[in-house]
Image 1 (cartoon, rainbow, N blue to C red):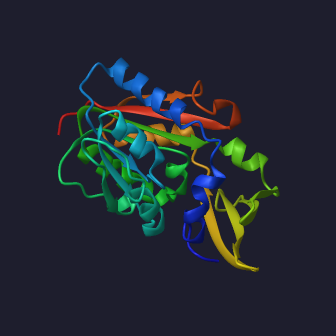
Image 2 (tube, one colour):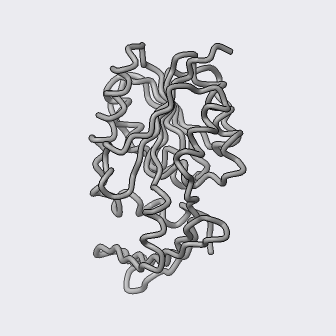
Length: 245
């Protein structure tokens, strides 16, 4: 299997055209409003192809976008938009996050946190605590463990005229993760190219994430089920960096 978000990167947007990005953005801005602070500079951690990054930039936010996949960042940086301050794109793993200064908030959307192995979560939260300003926010979503277990053994098909993607979901009880094996067939003239990659997402328990965030210095940690795609196994977690360094 290839690495995650290699061959799939160029097809990601076509396969996720039904994602309600506007609802995600509205959720973030509602949380910013509740916090009653100034939110101008925002980190988009595990930004993927940068759809939300650009949407927020168009609304006036100064965006820093990080992802471990150079292929996904290539797609993200290629999305030209007429914004006052274009996003800054960084190729970094979440556990090695290293910014030039602090941000007002950090977001991580569409399962980004689920890709992080449990043994790396402490370091990810430690770095977020370091780079999110005091009284700033961290907002991310996860799929619940029950959702991952519910799709064990399922086979999914996504296709258009030039691409066919077959993916299989297998839940590993011992490792507490779900593995997606993907085969991507893309048209090249009269022929089809086959490429494969594997994705692993970890079934993080929400209460465990809450404890880790608090251990890292975050407070007012909330588990939000009334959220975008909440009816399809998604949960948002919001935390305030109220501890002063």
